[in-house]
Each structure stands twice: as C-alpha cells, then as structure tokens.
Length: 476
Image 1 (cartoon, helix red, strand yellow):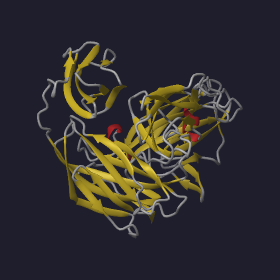
Image 2 (cartoon, helix red, strand yellow):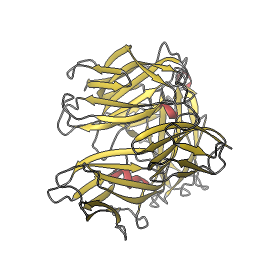
Image 3 (cartoon, rainbow, N blue to C red):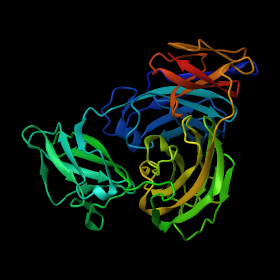
Image 4 (cartoon, rainbow, N blue to C red):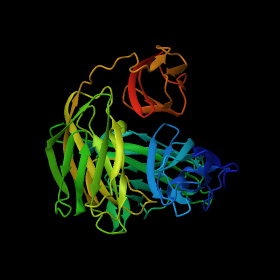
C-alpha cells in the first residue's frame, strides 16, 4: 500500500530546483491495514519500505522517525551512485506508540524529504487480562498473581506465553491445555508452581525482578490476541545493594561516554559483569546528555542491543517506566571499530539529587527485525555484558524564564497555543514534563498547541537556527 502522494522537499541550488522525494510502502505479508497504515506487530516484525530519489550521490543518509509521543529514532544508510535510496525501517519492539508518525530523510549535503505513516492496533487484539496483584515482591512469588483473562472465544482453546525481563517468551504450562469458559473467560495462576516450555524442556517459573508480559493467543481459529503486564519487585530495595545481573557468555561492552563520564574496557573481557561504580558522571537536572556506547557483537552476523537503566528516584530499583532507555544496537561490531549506538537522555527535573546508579546492559538479539530489549535490569542473559556506573545528579544552573538572545515565549502562563518569537528561523519546539519526558514536539513552526496538556510547569526547548535554548512555561 504505497502512499498515493509521495512527500516532497526541495532545495534551490545554483539557481536550479533540485527536488528530493520519498515514498513509504506499508505493504507487508498478512497486514490487513488501511492504506498508509501498518499494524503494530508488523511494524516491528517487518517494517516499512522507504524509497527515494534526488539526493546526493553516494551520500550518507540519516532517517529520523518521530512517533506520536514525540519519541525519536534514528538510523543511517547511504544513497547509490544516482542519489537513490531503498531502506527497510522497522519498530524496535512489538509494542509501539499507536498513531501518526513522521519520517524525515536527510543526506550529508542537507537535502531533506519527509513522509508520514500510521501505526494502528491490530483489530484482533481484544483479549484482556487483569492481574491481582499487578505488583508483588520476590518473597511473595509462591503465591504470585491471579490473572483473569477475558474476551476469549467461549469454550475456545488459548495458549499463553510468559516473557520475563531477561529472556524471550516461553509457553506457559504447555502440557496442560487451557480453555475459556462459556463467558469467554479464564483464570490462571502465575507463581512458583507454574511451568514454562523452554528449549531444554519444561522448567519451573523462577522469580526475576522487573517487568513481565503475558501474551494470549486464541487457538479456536479466530486469531484473537492480547497481553497483560505484571511487575516483580525486590524484597528490600536499597541503593547500596542493587539486584544482580549476569550473562552466560561474555560479549563485552567496550566504550561508554555520557556527560563527563568516559570509559573504555577490554573487548575480550571474560567476565559478564564489570563494576565501574567508582567512575562518576556529573549531570544536572533538566539538561540533555548524549550517551554513546560500543561493544563486541562476537560475530559479523550478530546483533547486540544496549539498554540503560538509571535510578532517578533513588529507590533501589532500576525498572520504573521512566528509568529504562533503549540506546540502540550494533550488528557485527568488534567493539573497536566505528560502530556505536547513541541516544540523547534528558535528566528529569525531579531527579533526586546526589549519587545514583547507571546500569548498562548489552544483550544478544536474534536480528535487527526481532530486537530483544530487557524490561528489567536483573537476572541472567545468554550472551552479553552488564556494567554499573555512578551518576552524580546536581541542581541545574538557573535558566531564565524569559528568553535568551531575543527568543521569547508567550503567553506565559499559557492556556492553549504557545508562540515562540524570534528574528531567526525556529527549527523545532520540544515540550517536556516535570519528569523530563518529551510530551510534544513540532518541526519548522513557531507555535505549539498545549491545550491537551495537564496544568503544571513544563520545560520548552527551542532550536533556533541550530542553537538550543531552554525556558520554563506554566500551563494553566
């Protein structure tokens, strides 16, 4: 299903018009979505195909996707000798923000083109599950949680996969067939008596701290699906004794930079865990810092993902929703080449001051189209490495609510539309909440609609001709 209208961007060079175009193809196997749309699962499992022309020949190309929540994802490629591109772009996880995406393509000379596509929920994702309790401590794993599954086909068979924070999903109680009752409901118990069908056979379910996912699949022929999340907490969380993590086979992290923290380590290290808590990165509330990591993928075909966990609230756990960052991945890297993964991380405005823990996980993944991203910072992994560091969170230097260098934001307080006034071009406006989460972003405009945001104090970052400025805005 190709876009009926490709999206065009043009650039005037030496008095001649040179137009760049891209087209986004959302046609994938078994994807019964509307035109220009792709089902959530297929966005991850297959992705979208991007073709383009009119770019610089043999040029580096940067793809930037902006999701409906303002989240950014960047990948790179190159054009051919005629300035054309063909690229497959997919979601990082099988659960993605639903809604309207913008994709920007830019070559090394600054030529750009943009396009749009929509990620939609699978209409068959109707099965729901309610867990009681939804959170419990490791010591309570014997009693665990009861999950009531609804919206099944009455009397239909259902299969359930359980994904723990440190490994892929395995089938629950495969040796016992499970069926819904006449109301399309099923009660299941998830506890120490549960069993999973692993490659080695049936194994007991073991407690691992972090976020778990139960996935439901209808086997009556209707193809219905759904999922439920639960969370396993540490017994006595403490910033002096974080949970343990290890890997069966070491595939080392070789380089980490974040703020003024920089560390290089052995690409052939035999230990799957390295303690670098004596190395400290100094950061300030409300500021952004780029994290760059490298690692040995231990094979030209192997893919490694990097995930960072930062204990912003210093409660001794590393898996709160706003504490997990998917940095990126490398494929076939030796750890000593030019390959790296990067992500810009914003320190929350309400991050607790003082020293806290940064944990970095490098984990082997099946492929670039089947990424594995840990949902907890604990447990045992097949291949990879874990490194711990210290971050010193400090109060930010005062930022004037008024503008700097003739950039003004008004009205402040604002009820609906905020205007950025400048005598230069406004490239982008980004709005962050008090937790440091990006809640809204807009490109090439000098206004942003904040009417749907809750009342409170927000940080607004503006990019004016490449210079970034930060202001605080009160939303009424």
